[in-house]
Image (cartoon, rainbow, N blue to C red; front, side, top):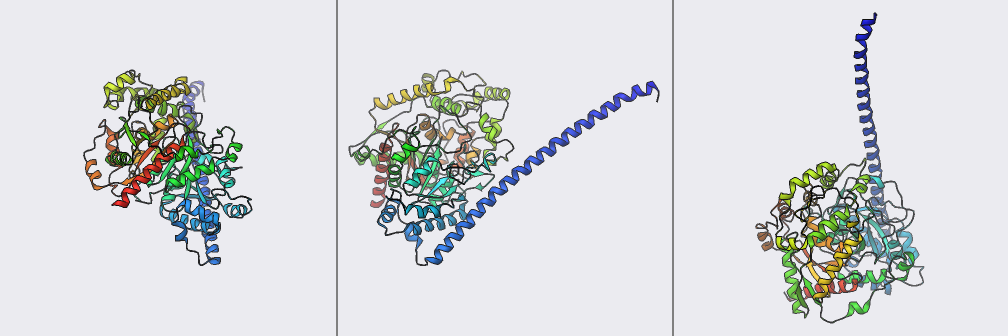
Length: 614
């Protein structure tokens, strides 16, 4: 080969080498992704096998008990309300064994129908023997309790619906589980959640979709949807969920249950897994869900005890205030039917209207109330506060995971590059921001319309844009707004507030569809609930009615405050719900759970009296 030939050949060989390197790199990436995918699939299969073995174990223990005790009628046990059941267990006219195995058996039936149980807490049988050795019977002696997936239980995994947490077995019980056991309760199953729990459906790639027992075409709500489905189906008498935007109250509303979101840190959250952390503007809490208000009251009395205050010294040592709850003076109740941010469904509005009249007839004073600057509270304090890091912490937990269809649009939105979010915010501003109350908004949030692109479109239905962790989204802003809200409350001399709870139950898949493909906030429809996470007020949900044909007829003319795609999707989400539960929400000031529960009990009582007269 002469010199000229060599020179001519060099570029060609270099090109070949570059092409080979590129092909090799692509092949390496493909192989690496395949290996990661296989690893994820293996972990998910192992988790499903664990769940299947748990269900088989539940079948075995129930069969064994039935063979030894053929005369036990579980229907009589399952029909008892919690307070009555607790009395019988205290009196020893019912044995804890009969009660536990009745609920294990029923939980099996319910999960076979709606897929809500993810784990059997096998230590419950050992605990059954331990509670008999306790010197004093706790208030929840012998009561079977279900807990949400991410509530820590020794020897079990808190998955949060994410592969990230699989294989991480809890080394100790969470504080709430320890206190429950101290009070004689028996945690026996864990229940399903949506992937990452930042969603109000109930589906994840590991354990699949949970259905609403009242209508399998409807969602049970989320993120405590597994609890809602199990309790509604009769498979649990008392359950525990958590709430960062309505995750106790939404499943309670969708499933026709009573649920309480306490003030943050009234109950301990130590030992709970979470894919997001460090939030200052939004307070996550843990609370009970049950079939009636009396069950919630008994539960709170049991939990607010010396054991709780000892195990978590950060919890203020405030026992249940019997005097505050039992006060029989008429209440001054503020109310609103529409928060001005997200138009309620016809049944939501009717529920408040009817409950208001019943409470007035019972001697209470009902006073109209308008939440101040709600757009600011939801858009700035809640949405930006929840994702002040641009969702980086949450996205990190999704690395390598298979994304559930119900959260796909959310995760896609959070993953959009900052420069593109700025462009989208600029384009969508005139489309998404059309306030039905421009004069109120101009007075309360003068910078809203002029909000610069890239900081998200402020006001209702904002786009989720980059949210730098700045001080203005921290405690100071929340406290300032809280002070303003309480001032309005005090001006009217209110004791409590009555307002809508989101509902009725959404059609399957619509909690995810409401998010939309152009990044509208998934939390828009939860303005009725997430406000009280921002304010850190206790709030509870009580079912008061069911959807009637007239509600469905009125829904045909529903336009929403904006007439935008998300209002239209909300209309579709709640269609076909005749016969399903409709609830109201009861709210009190911080650390006044007893007053919140009193209003809930008043509502439950007047509604029951109305039904008995019909």
